[in-house]
Image (cartoon, rainbow, N blue to C red; front, top):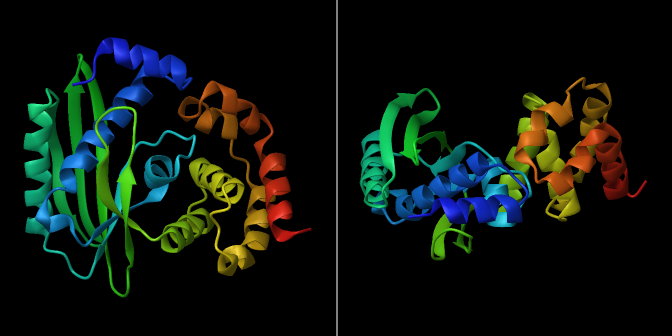
Length: 242
């Protein structure tokens, strides 16, 4: 189990809050045990937290998002979840399953994890996908626990989903994730066509990026979001070769 001393050290090293460190520790514990369950071999990690954990995005993230290939049995997902919870409790993390249900698009669970008298809420969402989902095995080296493996969407599919999320919901975190994708050269050439439409959205948005993103970024990265609209527009233009 992580110690308060380690949390304080990592908080200083990574220039973030102790809550972000605590949440990420819980996320790694969950993912490590979740992907040891046989029911998860066709469940692929995705979203902003995947960008953080698999591709080292600077942005700390709250939720765990997955896509399942084909029609996964909800009971199987719940069994994997409950076994994961048992393993986490052996690590001295008290876990309460606040919600666990089948949804029209797949499966949703909300876990309240308690350690050091702090509650960390983790929302998990598994989307059922019809069609071809390809996955990659990723080895996760991290600051908290021994390296472990998980199944993630291919980079191309993960990035395509993030771009779609930006166009359909346009949250501040979606714009920042695109910025990271562009800076890290993760955008496949076939997805560059959508950047002009994104640029229009960026120009029109009234989001307060500093307010929405500040708590989830290291202090050294916060200068990027002080004038984030112009920063992202410039990055889009660079990627388009303009």
